Length: 382
Image 1 (cartoon, helix red, strand yellow):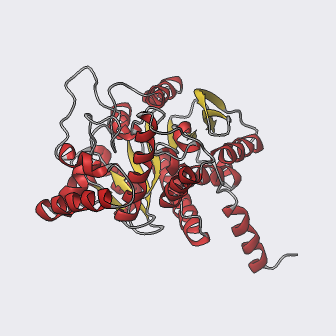
Image 2 (cartoon, rainbow, N blue to C red):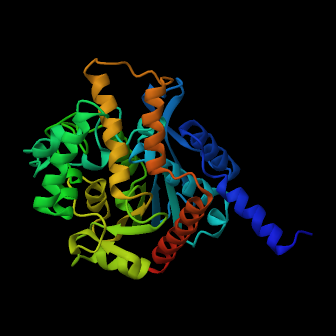
Image 3 (spheres, rainbow, N blue to C red):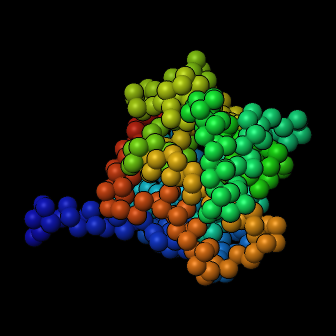
């Protein structure tokens, strides 16, 4: 018989194995875990392939009674390269006790890699350079203004990543930050812009494949028709190392914000109250889910911190610089090119600190939040 310490160590090691080295392995591990539950995944095939010509898809699986009136939706890979942690949380839940202890009347819908192209190619964007989490706007109406992004656009993606262009660009960014403050600087960069297609946090000019797929998934599973709904979208790259911040973008006075506080406690932060590390954004997928949920549930982002803002931001700038050059025909995207790999390794590290302590923190918090969500759904009268 194994000692308790030995058993705990084996369980710990097996749990960390839920983290994959790349998109293809993450998908294989997820689908293997689905098969282990005797469940069947639905494959939403992406029209493009990965860097090694691997097939791409967003895979979904429903665990629990199909007629369940209370549903937890867990989404990974909204921001592509952030999918390592989200995929691990989903796979860990399937491999652990989660499916066997579902509360009566509850079901879980796992949406794995909603942006599979970005996951595979280690980009935070979709295949068309669009930030999926800025893409949920009404494109038949006038698009939002950029509120400062245009002033910084040229400095954000300089002509080169080394030498004088970098110093000049950094001077421009530092001047803006000094004049307007750190919070205004971050908002100008990250709140979403619709004028610079090769720039950061570009929301697009039409719905992306990933947005259309998410809308189809919500319709196919009749999520709007459920009595209670909780949606958790898994992200990385913002906040203290390993900390899992639960962010609400609901209006603070609404019933959904109240439910979020009731179900998840005082760790919930709220963008519109200024208590979150993330300020209000345009075009969030949250706003799509708010319409689906109405007032019978809540939608939260579970954001795992990695490295300081400037480090993560620097990796993003380098990646956009690379793909801007490709889009302009100044170079090809040779996956094996050392310069390309240098940029991609930097992006991977920014959103996936491949260290045991970070992984352990992610899994602990992921399990906690999914448990809290199911407990909240199970006791709420609807």
